[in-house]
Length: 219
Image 1 (cartoon, rainbow, N blue to C red):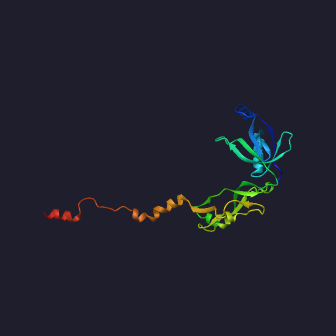
Image 2: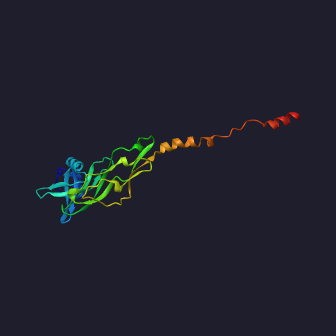
Image 3: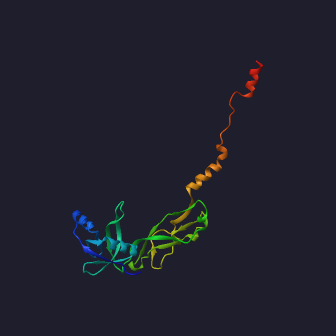
């Protein structure tokens, strides 16, 4: 994967300073990591968005002023609750020779015969998974094949994921990644048909019973 570069500048802390940064289309952030002091920085909003999209779960080369560039991961990205733009980022500087833990998204590929049936839906139980590897070996995603779902009783497990050689999964292999189920609408549609006979009301004739009518005529 090509290097993802992002420029940053040192910033002042404080609520007023942060408000001014955001007015200038800048995003406040911090840089931390083993062997370096935590520092507040700021990055351009548009350039940050491009870098996050390109890097995914991988490395970003962060240039802070004229210093030596740092290899960092975007560890925590805070978004506005309803405008959805980025409000703050925590960048972790990493050592290229030390393994680390990172969450990687799971991508479902292929097609499942059972999902072609009416009323069947896919249940995606685990959308991201924690792995251990060196920074240069961080995968963009792990893949799971939907071909394994041949019937509604089948499931895709963590052990079924395609994992690169130098990547170690940190989740038990028996956890279910994806499965299939009958949709609620389909279940509700079938329920009245099955209980229709029991649901039919008893028909009672109006008026007096015939026996009573006969007795009344003879009196």
